[in-house]
Image (cartoon, rainbow, N blue to C red; front, side, top):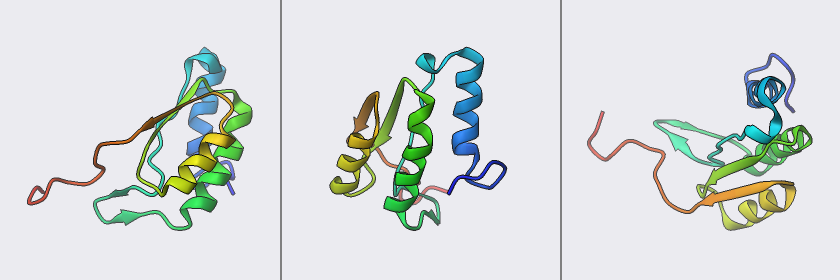
Length: 101
């Protein structure tokens, strides 16, 4: 699903480059599965993040902080798929404040 150079490929390419430069034990990637930003929303969130975790896990990144913006079932499956530190952030918003522009 993540092909080098495609629109989503940077989600793997950027942490891979950082891990190559400074060591995977010093790199993490923060994710918001199913989160919406303004009018943008992800499709097939379980498939997308399952494939992303499959691509990222072999890199040996130190941690992944995840905002709890998806269903609990997905979050549990992502935790099981991640080999290192998984930091679940249960709060926060990924959207503008009501009335803000």
